[in-house]
Amino acid sequence: MKRRTGQDREITKNWKPATLAVRGGTARSEWGETSEALFLTSGYAYDCAGDAAARFAGDQQGMTYSRLQNPTVEMLEHRIALLEGAEACRATASGMAAMTAALLCQLSAGDHLIGGRAAFGSCRWLTDTQLPKFGIETSVVDARDPQQFVDAIRPNTKVFFFETPANPTMDVVDLKAVCAIARERGIVTVVDNAFATPALQRPMDFGADVVAYSATKMMDGQGRVLAGAVCGTEDFINNTLLPFHRNTGPTLSPFNAWVVLKGLETLDLRIQRQSENALKVARFLEGRVPRVNFPGLPSHPQHNLAMSQMAAAGPIFSFEVDGGRKQAHGLLDALGLIDISNNIGDSRSLMTHPASTTHSGVAEDQRLLMGVDEGMLRLNVGLEDPEDLIADLDQALGSVGL
Image (cartoon, rainbow, N blue to C red; front, side):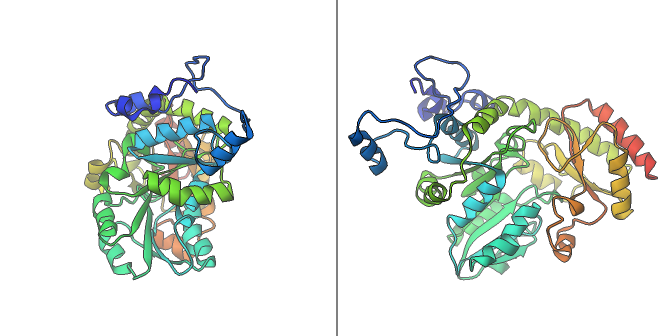
């Protein structure tokens, strides 16, 4: 790699987020390509046996194996770190690979984790099922109330893990308050920031230690590939996360990294427009359904907190109908433009019924406690004209008596 201006922090430190999203992390080869190069290689050759030994010993810079380093993946890692304001980043094969690695790399049998009650179904599976299998104690709390974190702390508590906004209830966590509670006690905060991305919210600015992403969502933004990322200090990424990553292999493919790099170039434009579209759609729904859960609306109980932490409320929210699963499924089946899909972050508008899809694996009592009932629907608002989306929702709502 020849020119690495996009990775030089002295050069990039004054760049604005929109510039970082396009040029951050870029490293050009001797060919001088303007678009990031795609390096499809699993291994690397050495000029001599001594170079190979030196690289494996850590005495010489350079690539050894694409499970550990790849030029395309490395560019993505640098770009996400710059956008996040983090010292370092490690890319993973999916968002759940990122969440799992961020937790398991630092927890051992006998440790205790406190998680947010409202969370993506697979994240709740981690806290409720997988971590306890390894002897890691877990508690879940209503993350909207910082005092509940305080009350749940034990002598062996090592990690706070939560989403904000949470999937799909859109609960908002007071980042500054909860991160301060953790830091005062030497507890590591791991924040899932997938709904907001660093374009709308940077948890480290409020004291978070580790930020994890499903880059599958807004970072790619067009429903093409799976990817994840974990951001933190150089010490955490290189000395805590890397040994786990190296030996367990949740590696991001170079092709997927390249696609996400292309997605990041338009992240700021897409997420701002989709946030605007979502607000228009949410305002329409607010007068039509019993409840809309969207931090961008003044009616949301944590609206002021959300707007103090986020540049905009994002493209994703949930709403509720009072006819349970039958009415919710009927509404979905009546849609003509909006797709039924459990994905989010896409440029296309998508809707799902969490209780029967993304959160179907969560025990019913826990699902109801977090606020995911049979009448809840989650909507990802895309880049279509919002008036077309409203017209589609209008006829679908009418078809089920709303």
